[in-house]
Amino acid sequence: MQTEREFVWQQRLCVTYSTLANRMSGNPGQTERPVDNFGNSNILLKASFNPALNLRAPTPFPRKLRFVRKFFIAGNWKMNLLRDSSVALVHQLMDQLHDSQDVDVAVCPPSVYLHDVGAAIRGSRLQLGAQNVYHAPDGAFTGEVSCTMLKDLGCSYVILGHSERRAIFGETDRDVNVKLLAVLNAGLTPIVCVGETLAQREAGQTQSVVRDQTTHSLAGLTAEQMATTVIAYEPVWAIGTGKTATPSQAEEVHADIRQLLGTLFGHAVAQKVVIQYGGSVKADNANELLSQPNIDGALVGGASLKAESFLPIVQAAMKIKK
Ligand code: PEP
Image 1 (cartoon, rainbow, N blue to C red):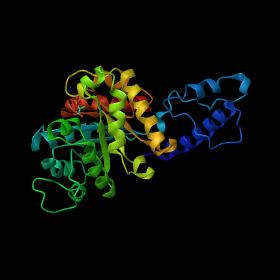
Image 2 (cartoon, rainbow, N blue to C red):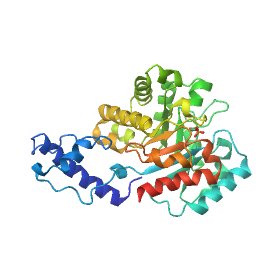
Image 3 (cartoon, rainbow, N blue to C red):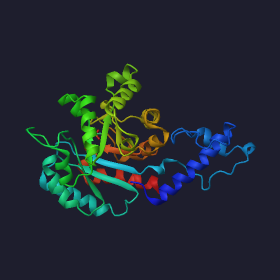
Image 4 (tube, helix red, strand yellow):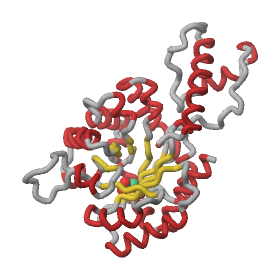
């Protein structure tokens, strides 16, 4: 997911910021000291402009430090569209996505249309994702679909633990965790959804709920597996309601998730994890949300069902990237 240029930049920045942090702490020899994560770099920004430290700021100093992570926009079509309209939609998207190398883009159609949509987008910039999976490799599980089957259809991603699956189908963090391990072992990229309900937010429980879901859903992952796992923060009260978390509300939770990942898996891993925001993302709020330092993309429901509402979200990411 990372281009060579981004990798080189990442290495340079890590060295520069380690040096800055170590000089700030009066500990210039200890280059391994963890530096602040990319969402909390104010101390480093201040340090770089402090003449007393006699440091040259990295040039050009990045407006944002997010470019170590590539934007990822995914459309969750849920149980919508039919075969013809699904294929027509991806044709419209592909016509407009030629310049989107800096942004990963995926569509997640209903499982019955994965084959047709997969065939239509083969060889294009669009990638294919599923909305759910069953953890067992095969067997007597009527109505279910395995990771191997999804791979066979050309899927790269699988959405796990979407709030609709948690609320309507009773999926727990443990279910998500079992599926997650199966998805990773199959070489697919999981998109793990977490988020609080309105009642939980109003009771001041957002942080504890999201931290709990994240910790339990990710139990047993290696650092390497974590680095390739995508997280989608989706406040339940914002999904399909037209209510969006403000950019600062969303950023606060994203930064906290990244901090938690740092504690669980190490700082370097936490910096690599793509954290999408989901919840009524549209053309007119995408730019502000995606401009937040810890928001690395969007999981889009309603607005992903039409090219004219999905493409501007991808284009917003492309503009921020440039
Ligand atoms: C979703 O289904 O993950 C979602 C965020 O939906 P919407 O964009 O419609 O709120």
